[in-house]
Image 1 (cartoon, rainbow, N blue to C red):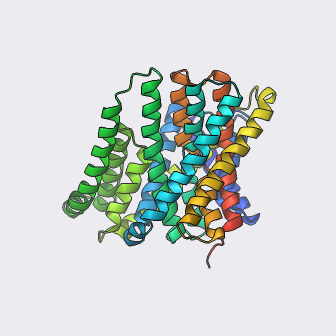
Image 2: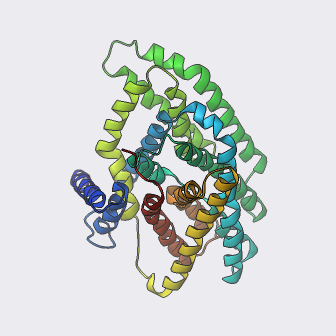
Image 3: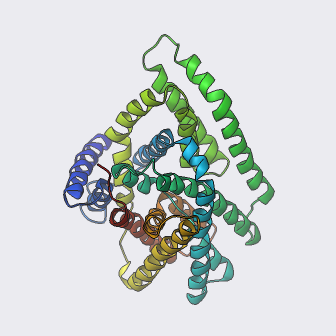
Length: 376
């Protein structure tokens, strides 16, 4: 069954992506939408399974690893201030207005704060693909977006730990912060000193494809320890890519990882987001879904956009950066699952927010297309 599902996903995602490009939109939009069509909500040809979910996770990890490989480290350093402004701007607005929305919906203070934090999450995996398609990933805007996403992820997860500790959750706040500091300190040190040494030594083994294998080992180890310490696995994969980007193996690894990723894993990731969509029983909450979707889109667009403007970007570039931060993706899905488990979200609100997250993910590529112009 899995083999057939993979065949269906691959042919559908490639055809839908091509059709999306013909219609003047990024290919990723077609891949997201075809997932909804293939999934239980429409045709039911593909269902979410543990194996498919695992392949999807590998896809997003490899996508962010490729983004790291393409990162210009000097440009990344130059955009540190801008990334900070964008990251915090993209947190403050959704957090404040999300909390206010929760109060209006008669949620408790803790539930309202959780809603605000969930809306503050950002997942730029979708934006990364759109930026790549438009040749904008290596620009100052693209580097700022990636840096802001790292800041966003860390701040939101730490804030979530604060909330869980005060709302009765069994969370050791000091340990949460310690783990994150330990991960970033360790990742930077290992990326600087160990990664080049490991690549050099592993490449000399008398077996085939040692360079690409060593790169994937580094990627997956960084992703694992990022997730283990409470930082998203995609952040670990991105840092691994950045570490390798300054070595002489960069171009060989990039070419081969891109081939592996886009032939199977990345299409599965994009399509699986649509497959996860469940529209049963949303009719009675349609008004709430529309209102929260508009709130989710505008707060990121305006908040992150203002942050970019304060950092010196033009209004057009600021709008592009803001639109790239709109997608909540898998990061918000994980936070929503935590909220359901800890009873900070009701089952009905959980179902509503899953649709809202999907909406933000789908609208991000066309919004970016309106602002960023692909380079020849």
